[in-house]
Image (tube, rainbow, N blue to C red; front, side, top):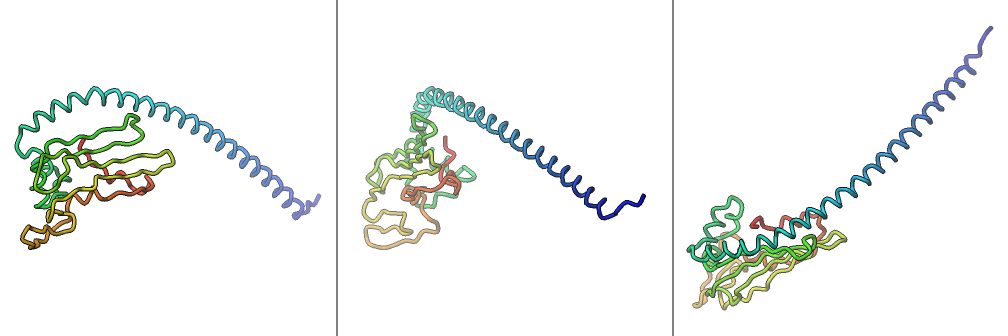
Amino acid sequence: MIVDKGKKSKVAERGEDEDSEHIDGELVLSIERLQEIQDELEKVNEEASDKVLEVEQKYNEIRRPVYNKRNEIIKSIPDFWVTAFMSHPALGDLLNEEDQKIFKFLSTLDVEDFKDVKSGYSITFNFNPNPYFEDTKLTKTFTFFDEGTTKITGTTIKWKEGMDTTNGVSQEKKGSKRPFADESFFSWFSETQQKDITEGIHDESMPLK
C-alpha cells in the first residue's frame, strides 16, 4: 500500500498543532496559578509591613525620652555637631568652611516620624542665638502620599543682613564679598518640591536617626 506523503505530512502537522495548543493551554494555567500565589504573598507582605510599622511606632515613643536625655548631654559638649558631621564619611562633605562656623551654634538635632509612620517624617535643627540667622529651628519635612509622591518642605531661613551663605557669597557688613568653594549646606532647606518616589526622592533624606 502506497501512502500519500502529502496527506501524511498534513496529519503530522495537525497532531503537532494540537500538542502545541495543549502545551500553551497548560502554560497559561500555570502562569495564572502563579499570579494567584503572588497576589496571596503580596497580601501577607502588606500585613507584615503594617505589623512592623506598628512596632516601630511603639518604640519611637519609647526612644523619645532617651533621645531627650542624650540631647541634654550633647549640649554640654562643645562643637559636638560640627565634629560629628565633619567626622562622618558622607556628611562631612556637605559642610563648607562657613557652614562649619554656623554649625558651632547647633544645639540639638531631632528626627521625628509622623504619628502614622508611613506618612512621613521631619528633621529639625535647633540652634542657639547666632549672628547668621534669626531662626532657632530649621526644619525639613518629607510627606508621603498614597499615590506614590513625596512632598518636601523646608524652613525659609531668615538670614541676618549680609550673612546669607546660600547665594554662594557672604557679604560682610563693610560690603566686601568672599566667594565660597562649595555650595552651602543650608541651600538644602530651600529645596522644596513634590516628586515621584521612583525618582529617588529618598536621596534627600539624611541618615541621622
